[in-house]
Length: 354
Ligand SMILES: Cc1ncc(C[n+]2csc(CCOP(=O)(O)OP(=O)(O)O)c2C)c(N)n1
Ligand code: SF4
Ligand SMILES: [Mg+2]
Image (cartoon, rainbow, N blue to C red; front, side, top):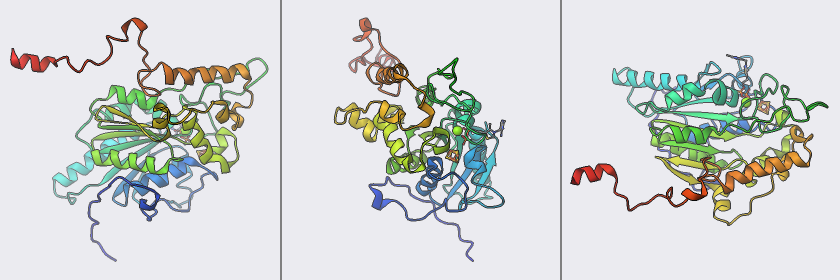
C-alpha cells in the first residue's frame, strides 16, 4: 500500500467525448432510481474534478440514495451536511484545509472542495448560506445545485424550482383547481450571477450535455474562489415518465429554451451549447409543448396552460436583457440610453487626468 500523496491535478478543458477521463469516482452501489439524471450529475461532477476532491452533500436523494446501509458509490472522501448547509459546509471545509496547510499539518496542494445540494436544500432552504459563501473570495469551493424540481427524497413536494403548473404531492390537480401551483420557477443562477461580483464563475448546465457540464465544473475549480453551478436534472419518478427518456428530456429542456445553458466568467456571460446556437439563429427553438407532453406532471394541462407557459418562455428570449439569463427588460424610450457606450470614459480614469 502506498501512502504517497497524489500530485495536484490540472483540469484542462475537455475537447470531446474521447478526451473524457476513463476513471470512475462515483461507481455502482447506490440506490437512485433507474434513469436518475441527478446521479449522472454526481458521476460527471467527480469525473471532471478527479481524485483530489472532497465532496460534501446536503440531505436529499443524492445523500440518502447514495449512502444506504453502509454502502456508497463515492470513491472520493465524502461527508453529509444538513439540508440547508451546502454553502456553509463548502466554506468551512475550504477554510479548514487552508488553515491546516498554513500550519504545515497538511501538504500544500490543490484539493477540490465541492458541496452539492438539491433544489429544496439550495434554492430554498440554503440560499442565504450559498449567497454568503459566494462573497468570500479567498476560499476555493464549488457549490453544485442539482435541480430535480422537487423535494424528491421526501416524495416529490413542491419547491421554488418546480415549474409552473406541475403536479407534485403538494400541488395535485383537482376539479376545483386544475393548477394548484402557478408561480414561475425562481431564476437561481441568474440571481446569483447578478448579485455576487466576487464569484468568478457561475453557470447553468445539464447532464444531457455531458462534456459541456464537465467543462463547467473544471472551469469553476480552475478559476477558484467560491463558485456555483446549477444543473437541471430530469427525474423519472417526480416528472412521471419512463426512465429511458431522461437524456431526451434534458435535451428538450434546452432546445425549447426553458433551460438555457450559460456561464458567467468574471462577469462576462457566455451562452453555451444549443442555447448559443438558438441565440445566434443557427438553431430554431422548439415549442415547449414538445417537452411538456412527455411528462405526466403536466398531463392535466389544457391549451391555455401550454400557451401561458410558451408565452413566459418567449418573453425570456425576446424581452430579457440577456436571453434566459438576466430578466430585466428596457422601456422602449430608454433602449438607446441603456446601450453600453464604450466611448464614455470611466470616472476613475477621469479623476486621474483631472
Ligand atoms: C431541516 C430539514 N428539514 C426537512 C428535512 C427532511 N428532508 C430530507 S430530504 C428532503 C428533500 C430535499 O429536497 P432537495 O433538496 O430538492 O433534494 P432531493 O431530495 O430532491 O434530491 C427533506 C425535506 C431535513 N432532512 N432537514
Ligand atoms: S426520485 Fe428522482 S432524483 Fe430521486 S433518486 Fe429517483 S430519479 Fe433520482
Ligand atoms: Mg430536489
